[in-house]
Length: 251
Image 1 (tube, rainbow, N blue to C red):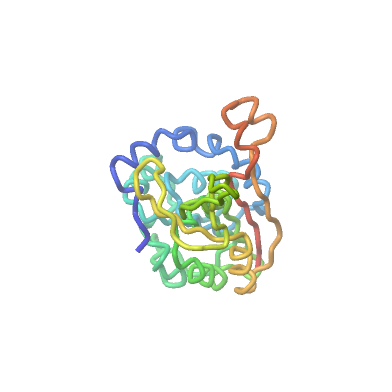
Image 2 (cartoon, rainbow, N blue to C red):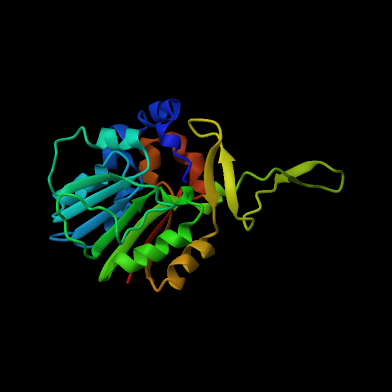
């Protein structure tokens, strides 16, 4: 089962104060780039994997989606999503993305089974140990003309976690060893101690998609723009590395 850190009271309290939690999609600096990757949603069936507070689900409806489903493992996140005015065309379900069966899941409200036109995920896939299983299911339930658009923490950010140093001839530590190609779980202290994220290389993400017959349309290594740094000067040092990896692909 996915580590359900978002139901930890301390973690959830901290997460709830982040700009992306308080301001919605407008508080997520990568959102404008992600939005440009999305297909026209008018009349479409949309699935959000790791929907959190439901910001994208509601935006998709405003963009014309006919039906939207949001899945998340966290009861606290879903409870927050359901505090917004009910929309009969938006359904939230608790589901562990490690084990969910997208083809047979209960879609609720008498919704008929059928393919999804867009499957979307924001910063959720890097928590999953068995992402290959989920991508296989995504490929199965996507419409033949459907899209998968998602973001993850950039592998440069998830790589640290294996201690070690490169030393010079005199034994002085000169460079930390991050072991980028050593994939697997990393324990981090982000809003709480012991948050587990799965580190994968860019090549692994791409091959997971290609091996399931999905066609890559766009890949972006996102980092703050000059305008964003001007608005948030603390991000200046982070321009040396990308924050997020954004990927769009289709059947």
